Length: 89
Image (tube, rainbow, N blue to C red; front, side, top):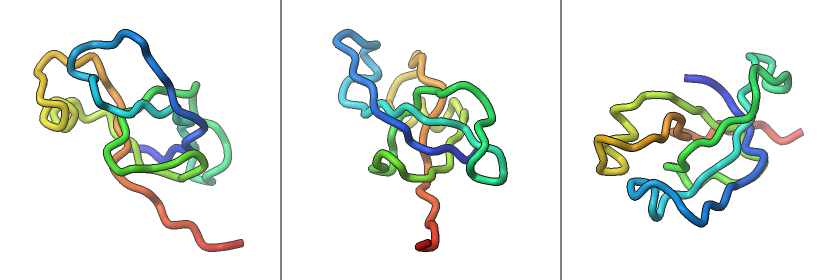
């Protein structure tokens, strides 16, 4: 599991059948300081109704995605599994 910031959404005109109806997020994995990038942005499946700018917890747990999407052959790797509360500045 890793912290990430949602920086956008993605639209696909053609996608794997397991992803039909799934919302695709563009997430920026972060270091523990919650601001420094930890890798290149990734695509993640939204399972928690997160929005742009939200800090989320992402996971690459394949079984979770296969169960959630109802497919043993989904190509998806990352999913957002929780929204992290942030204190107001």
